[in-house]
Image (cartoon, rainbow, N blue to C red; front, side, top):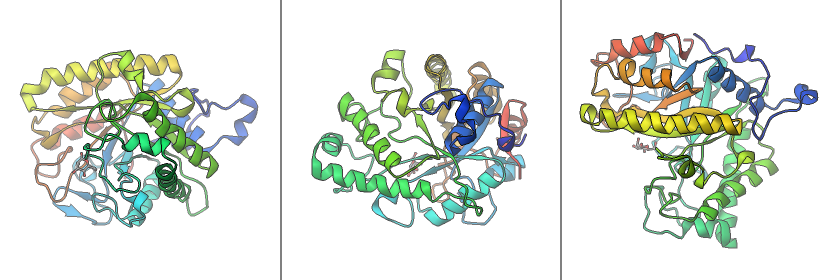
Length: 360
Ligand code: BMA
């Protein structure tokens, strides 16, 4: 099923951007995308997403029009996922080598085929350029929101990002709405903005600064997603929640580790975390999403139809994204490629009536 972006009814699901009825003519691009995502969830449909899908795949890169998902399922994913890491440094390619110009072209191509796009940000810290996974300095976030000199550098990073989002325009000059989920997996300890590495107040400050700069720069095409890693309780989910005015999508990132052995743990963690997400999203008037998941190497050939699909049917969410098929690390992939044992099963998954793909 192709994404009915153009046919979206413009009844927003609420949140920071809910328009008053009288203002419906003035809906921002972000409001329209919120409506599309809300309709997906209400209709029991889940958009399938894949990171960096059309720019490289298992053992190929930058072949125009290629996609491992397209080659195995016959369709492009309904959602393309991207990462902006290194844009804040003014670089022309991101942390995984994707040229930002190519990314922009593919974002527009995905929009033209009726699909949607989401962005994460594995950034380098302002000034010192500490990569996202280096957690040796636990003062980074504190300084970003409290030290005037570092804050100024953070604001410069944000201005670069705001300019990027503002530059996503169709040839007719219309802004393209996208999802952005900054400061993700912060309940874990592996990023310098993780719970072990900064205080609750400082973490929330990252969001506050970001929104201030984006609003000042007139960014009206960003739908905001909050995506902690797996959580054990509503309290944990909300501990660092920046507030309803900052968030449109409530999500969670839960991966399946250790193949067969890790199956029960994955099912339990994913169902519990998505259950929390769905309950809180309902209460807060937000969209529920599975913002990242996957089984590296798809080492269980029926994983898509027998593990992921039942989880999505039991826990309906607007979209579910799996991570990238690296071109230069043979075991690092999350969707089967042509000839992989899970190919047929993946096709079955994408053909299921709840799964939304983009047309070719
Ligand atoms: C990780 C891995 C890394 C990659 C990073 C950012 O999960 O895929 O190889 O650099 O995401 O995309």
